[in-house]
Image (cartoon, rainbow over all chains, first blue to last red):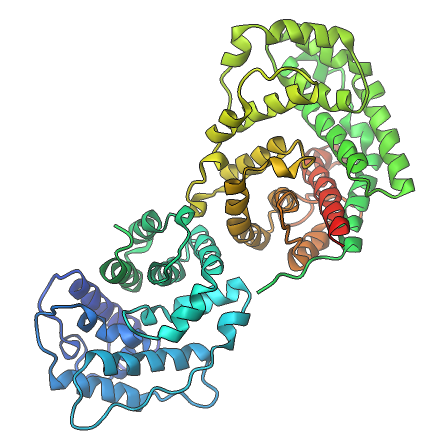
Length: 233
Length: 306
């Protein structure tokens, strides 16, 4: 993700700024959130950044009683990103799920415009049941943005059956200081109904924020776990 | 998602090779005149001797040794008691010098279970055990469990409550599993060793602890396998073999077996150390003893499951 355009800021910095904006909004801080305010449609890297953030680009709109109405500019930013990066035939499962998540979030959180949103693409889910826990954990952390209210209900149901395996992944990720993976798994575990109490998820999320929260994407997952599922402190 | 279990042949081979190395290097366990100059050095040297005896005992108890291996283990055990400990006199001497040290009792308990006796040592230990000081001795909670287990092995009334001692250990409190570091990991493996009398009675692990270990042990094993910390991985594999439904994870055991040197020694971490024979022995005897222990336990569980 370190690709650069000539003379411009790197994509990673654009993503970091956008993630910070989303996290701030989820905490109820800063100006009223508008996706088009943090990622302008005219900026070259906007679509790539939206692609990486996936559904999280719209996460603040999932908060009830949001302060500002969603404008048409946001719709344009999302449509542009969806058009720029449709998953190809050889796309990874994670890419398809992430793309699907953005479409689901558009359906759920953005007003229906003049033209309908595209239908979510079929995303294969055999890996959810079949992957050994280390691989499963890695993939699930990469689709952490789907841990939003109402999104990917089928995936959430399937993952509930792998709760212990995700808890193992969480333990290993924290031990390895892989904060991004740990935060993503912690966010999913926060959404699942039966995260084991012995895992210490609340103090774990706080620990991850303390140790790895300098990375805005880590901070975003931790804030989302707290804002939407009341886990962590 | 189920885990594939290692074959009994693979599990057994690790222990067979470890035993060969231990037997080939048995002279290195011997205390030297220099060691006898200080009790601290004696205690240091007694630790591997006690662990060696424990291993042989586990091998007999689990009944997984072939006839050749069994004969070799028996000879090694006799050598340990007669030659290395002078029929228990080395332990009695240390006890005389340091009456409140639990070390002679802990080492002796294994030999006692195997039928060896030193009445003088037993009498001296009993006097000290009746002091308040014996129960007031400050030690790590899992070490306290070790002392209580040694008393149990000798058929003595426990000097304090076993269940409460378990509750005071790190593992007994079921803390956040992501906080486990190297030393915590060794604390928890030793809690399981003492709790189960070195794997003899896995059913003594309280249900909540067994559930906790079943859930999180795979994460720790995977992580320390990736770090190639064979000494700790071996201990964690013993813990796995003590659980109600051990995984005996084939993938982990294959990595573990592959780390073993051609001579049968197991390195502590990564690869075998270099240097003179005495130094290498000091560095690898513990992981090699653990390999023998893990192999005996896992082979036994694999065979009973089959």
